[in-house]
Amino acid sequence: MPAPVAFLATIGADEEAAYLAALAAAMPQETVRPFRALTEAERAAVDVALVTNPDPAEVARLPRLVWLQSLWAGVERLVHDLGPGAPPIVRLVDPELARTMAEAVLAWTYYLQRDMPAYRRQQQAVLWQPRPYRAPADTTVGLLGLGALGSAAAHRLAQAGFRVAAWTRSPVSPATREALPTIETCAGIGALPDLLGRSDIVVCLLPLTAETCGLLDAGRLAAMKPGAVLINVARGAIVVTDDMLSALDAGHLDHAVLDVFETEPLPAASPLWRHPKVTVLPHITGRTNPASAAAVVAGNLRSYRETGRVPESVDLARGY
Image (cartoon, rainbow, N blue to C red; front, side):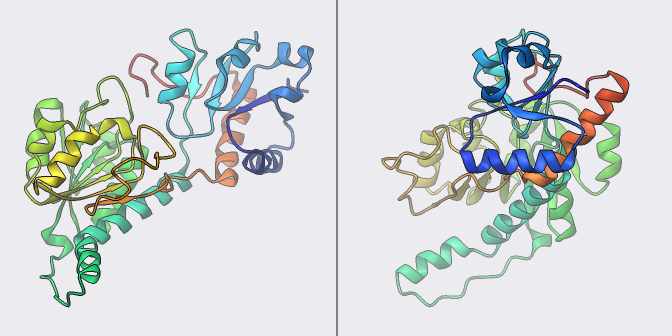
């Protein structure tokens, strides 16, 4: 009988119950229990923990811990909180999460491509005024980030007929190029201004790291095409909020769809709530589905039990 699997999560009781039920159904051979329900002897035997931004003190009380399986795609807080001495951290790479993220990116791209924010403003002004139509083929979407989620979004956008150009911090792998043959790619910080300058819609899907924090500042927002729009479904800290508001107020940017913020929930006093050129979403674009996540976790655990090898883990130096 394998050691119990610890469940360390900073989520509500209903969500925890949904995860535990899904995990039990996906891997009946494993015993998954919340940290608080484990005895000291069981904690001493735990070698795998399933986590969502856990308390570092609780992680430290698992002396035989070999690796951590994140139940979320984003791991920047986990990496930060646990520090360089953390056990290997395995990200959740869930095809269903990638599908829902790509679906949302396409939906909000259509929202902007079809001028829905402008029509909303016209409705409020009681103004009946059709606007010129711009086809997807005449619309360039600049995608920042081409990991699992970015690649799924790029594929979905290209299928819909949009011109897609993707930027990454490091060169794109041959496998990614082969999987996305119609997607133009560029890499390195020096290539970013050019991509921003010719994109009608910029979609941010980058991980939050020391290098990407504040990446879209006043200078890079100024490099964006006049009248362009921004979709941020990555992390709030990648965009400098005050600089973005200045660009919107000056008319350089036309609109921003924001699903992520530095402080969540977004404080009631934030000017983003009431800004006429901002669409605020309550971090709903890339929600993890407990059932599909449990299937991914079950596969990783089964492989580990059979081979003793830890699944591919996060590069702690890079932060993803």
